[in-house]
Amino acid sequence: MSNLSRRSFALSAVAATTLAACGNGIGGSGAATIDARVDATLNQMYSTYPGTRDLAARASGVLVMPLVTEVGLGIGGSYGRGALRLGPSTVDYYSATSGSAGLQIGAQQFSHVLFFMTPESMTEFRRSQGWAAGADIEYAFREQSDMLRAETTTSLAPVIAVVFGQTGLRLGATLEGSKYTRIIP
Image (cartoon, rainbow, N blue to C red; front, top):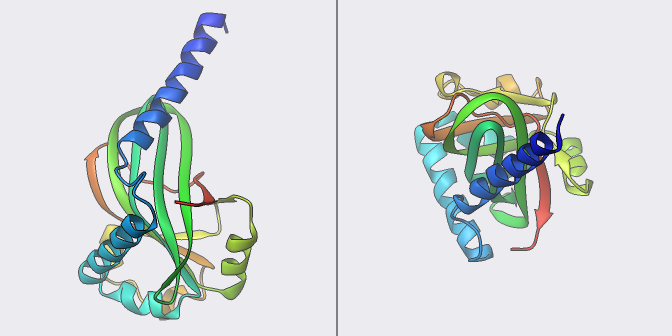
């Protein structure tokens, strides 16, 4: 790979991540803004997918990312900020970032909620320096979310992700490879 190609690759990665962060709209206003957006996101999810209310009641904790911005043009990235709730109380704030490379083009924004269904998964998440979403997550897709019930899913996966509210032109919304890091807003 020539120096120009490496430089172009690096600049593309930086540009994609910067665009994702700039378009997010949550930065700078602090904890109160994040909490207000988390409340609105939860209300939207509960009204759109009523089965998630029971899921939240059974969860050990819920991580809500009200707005994740994802962009890609060969190199891609995503960024969002949210809050971890234990019951009705926010206990920590997190950012979610990811990077990708491959055949991709477009941009989108979406919301996602992670339900930590076991005390162990919640403890592991809170103790980690940076938790990466991976194979231990079960996804609930839009077509299935209205049928989502805690009784059927709590025994299947320690963490359940619900991705919804997609806007924009990009194929798919995935959390695979996303890294969650505790922040101070």
